[in-house]
Amino acid sequence: LPPFLLLEESESHASLHLRGLRFSLAERRLLDTQLRAILHVAQTWDVRILYPMVIGGDDFAQAIAAVDRVADMAEEFGVRDVLVDFGRDIRALGSPVDAPCWVIGVEDGAKPGEVWERLGLTNRGVASSGNYRRHVIINGKAYGHLIDCRSGWPVRHDCQGATVVSQRCLDAGIIASTAFILGPQDGLELIESTFGSEGTLQTSTRKLESRSYHAYLIQEAS
Image (tube, rainbow, N blue to C red; front, side, top):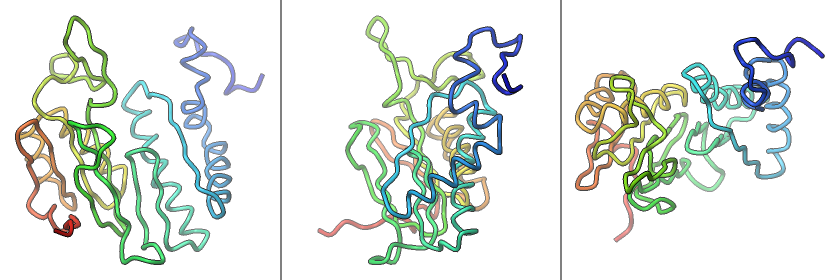
């Protein structure tokens, strides 16, 4: 077997080593080849990519960075207008042929599957974070997939979702997840203290926005 297919002593469980995501991230040349193939097909057909769950900070950062890598490759191919969407991790370059910007729907944390609001983006990355889709209910209590490293327990507060717009998707993803874990007020302070980023947090009773987030909002016709 080639070296990258051999199990490491620290990973005795095969599924931890041979998952497609970690396989690709560990072997950069394979990831680049796969992304170029996907980009080639996407010029003719709509393409959707499903990522397995990541198990650590490095996996998380590299997975989101793949969105930016695809966008960068598109620019290398001379593609100026492209929307890269890896499932709530998005990078928008240019604009569609029939509109001045890409329209991105922000999912409602209280009603998963429904659009809460719409953003108009060009040359920006956007990412959302929350427990509204990935959670388990034990003895009537919901436990999400995001862990607060300060307590070691899944996040449990009134924040239902966080969405951040940044220059690149990697930045947006890291800030959105961190803001969600911190909670509504501290999360908003984090977003506002990060240069070049704007965002919003949704709770069960209110919506919090950074100072210039409204500039990306598309106002619905009355």
